[in-house]
Length: 182
Image 1 (cartoon, rainbow, N blue to C red):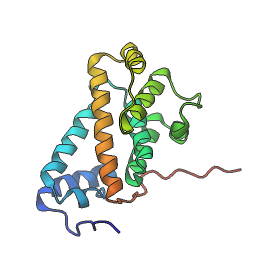
Image 2: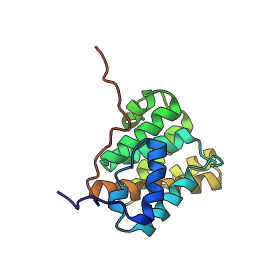
Image 3: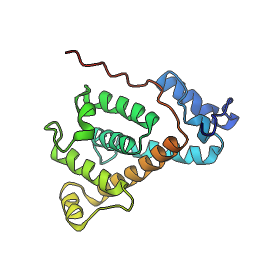
């Protein structure tokens, strides 16, 4: 058993909790752990908001797939849950979501999505394994702004997934995937 969640959300984070309820129908669990350091929680939330802005040079599906793959790699139950919801919402199905762990063998992914997933995996291992060949291929698909944002997204998702995984924050049932029927 890890550190228990806060039973009460700090006053300074109640506006954020209200936004969670409005958007997701409930308060997201991580606020009850991050709530011990509200200022850092706000900074992380602002970072997420900036990366998720409408004018991002990164396709929303690419952002969601990258986040979902990193969540899987970090074994973060909460992150897998919320990023799965975003992938399903943004793609309109669960096909890519169900294939993201095995993206190399799946025909569902575009060249850009494959490259972003390869980069996410290479940048997320310790130590990172991003080599010159991968950097060259990235430069052919992403301009400097997009690549910088992709790298920031990968770093942020690693922070979030590793924090939530280490704190053993559970999934909330945000993305319920129907079972396949035989």
